Length: 193
Length: 221
Image (cartoon, rainbow over all chains, first blue to last red):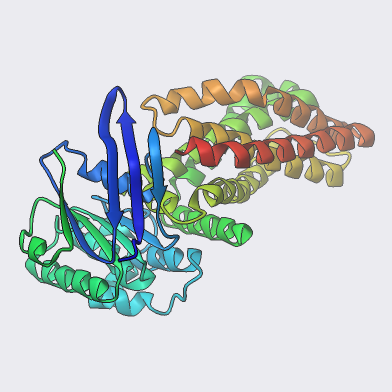
């Protein structure tokens, strides 16, 4: 099976501690779940794949169309959820037409989508961030604790979105402590210790 | 494509500043307060001397640039918004250019307010208004490349609020000297002086823009 992304011999050192050491990881289309206790390096692995932490050793191969959603919503304050998502779409050279419907499908009605993000609840901000999955349609989607701060309805929608992405032959990497039902449908479960 | 991406970042920055105008408000307030205090503290006669008025104007502009840029990056760090930009293809390269462009627009507005206040409060008479506009535009172009560069370099440091002025101001000294002399020359009616210093400011802007575009993408790792 052709890989979508890979880390080869990846070592990440933060301060004086090696968080990842000589890690080889091949990501194929479908779902990869990353599990491990707090401090095991789950977030660092996703950040390394996203290019947000430098590799001390090793190489990283990822497609241009990579979406990284971290533990926080990553939406710029002072700007509405709609304009935040329009920015991401236009930066990638995509149409902004899909932003409104995507936000609506994640439960943000037009009035809320037009409010500055800092006036939204934590759950609404998280939903707006998750709507990026539908807007940007990336080949590699990196989700760090995506089920935090969202209610059951949004969690169900997220599970559905993840399965749709996997069905479209995209690679989805999820670092989470929750939702063990994901493991059954995953191509691979990576345990970090 | 990089130009388009830079433009997108600048537009996003302008939207954020419109929604949360604390960077603009603090910069305008700071410049206005300094000019007002100057006119009251040393008296209109001394404060209205071209070299004194010009020096205080540009010192105020330098601090205003640092204030506005620091606030802009503080906003990026809230909710890790900057990570989303850095993870985009070409995001690192575009971030610096976009921030510089947006800060230039903001500083142009601050300079307009500060310039008008100086004219009124210090009773300045401008011999060469066209030359003055050229020097001020050149000076405004030259500040953001340096300030954004140092704010970016200090981005992940806890003491960045204190460090940025300490790091940036020594580098800005040649810029401030050139801007002060160019402004004073335009006020007193020395066209060659104004053009010469203004040209030097444009050169500073170009050199630091190239330096920033080269250093910042790597520094952001």
